[in-house]
Length: 252
Image (cartoon, rainbow, N blue to C red; front, side, top):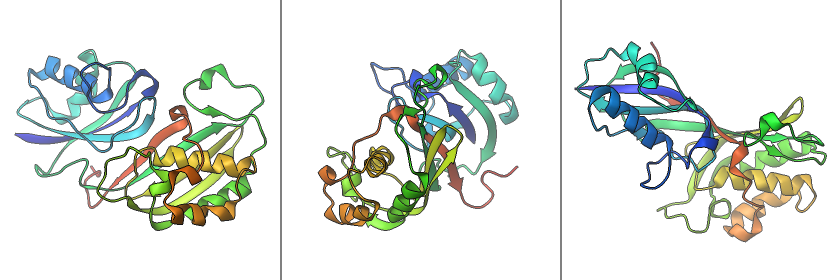
């Protein structure tokens, strides 16, 4: 038995999130079907993170333990050939320690939320960015984003129905930059709550349109009250951007 680690990317607009569901098309479900067609095995595919319906991934990792003798370097071609949807790309595959777990060995993740800041939305960004036609003061939004950095109880930035033991998370960095017509919010942390990044993005939009001040964010965090934060921004603009593991896991 080998433990294989895959690096993939996917267009989330085609899927009802990562996690397999009985009555919906998901990334994990499509990978499982392709794997079974290719190897004859029913795999246990362990993903690095859950993603909501419509959320994308520029970089995503999963591992699977297998008795298949297909060389690791052949999987990036072989797996798509097994009728894997075109919205999923397989970039690499390598053998890792048998105990490695793509979810639990992940040290931190970076998400990016993309806002198309134009008067008229591009048809090519449909379901790939949130459109916002009003002026977005990037310097102000970047200032506001810095208040997310640190270790806090982020209950105010979590969907009310989330079932987790603790809502304490550590945010290592946060920034807002402009790249042409796009405003990009990037945030890196040791973990994220359900809808957390989308609520952060929605709160920054509240700062942009003057509903709250940047300096209000610490009080919102301290309140632990979901109603104090901004809207839950649409999933279309959210991307899992980078995933970090320690040691030499991703090398070679």
